[in-house]
Length: 146
Image 1 (cartoon, rainbow, N blue to C red):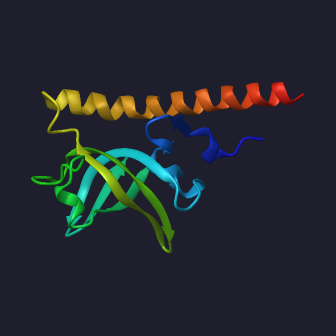
Image 2: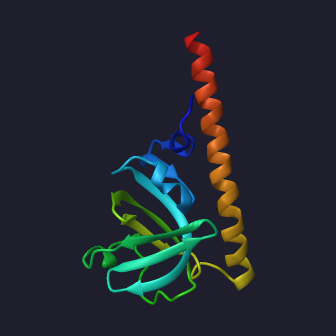
C-alpha cells in the first residue's frame, strides 16, 4: 500500500528528495522532509510568513541572513502575492512550519493578475500529476518484485 505522503514524492537529480504538496497534506509528510508548496501570502510577521492555498495555511520561517541570498525574493513582499516555497518541514504542535530554503515571489514574475490566478490553479494539477507519476512508479516496482 502506498502512503499519502509517498504519492507526492518526487526525486530529481539536482535537488534530491522533494515532496510536492498542497498545504493540507503536509501533516502526512515525514518531519524534516524537503517540501515544495505554493500559495498566497496571508500575513507577514517579521521572519514568519503565513501562506495559504485553497486547502489550508502554513507558517514559513525565513531567517534574516537567508533573505538576502539568491533564491529568496522576500523584499517588497505583500499580502496577496503568490509565492513558491521550498524548504524543510518541521512538525511542531499546534501546527507545522516550513524553514524556507528557497522563496520566490511568483507574482513579481507574472505579467498580469490573470497569470497569477492561472499559476495558482495549475499548481493543484502539478501536485496531482506528481501523485499519479509516483503511483505509477510504485505500481511498477511492485510488479517487478513479484
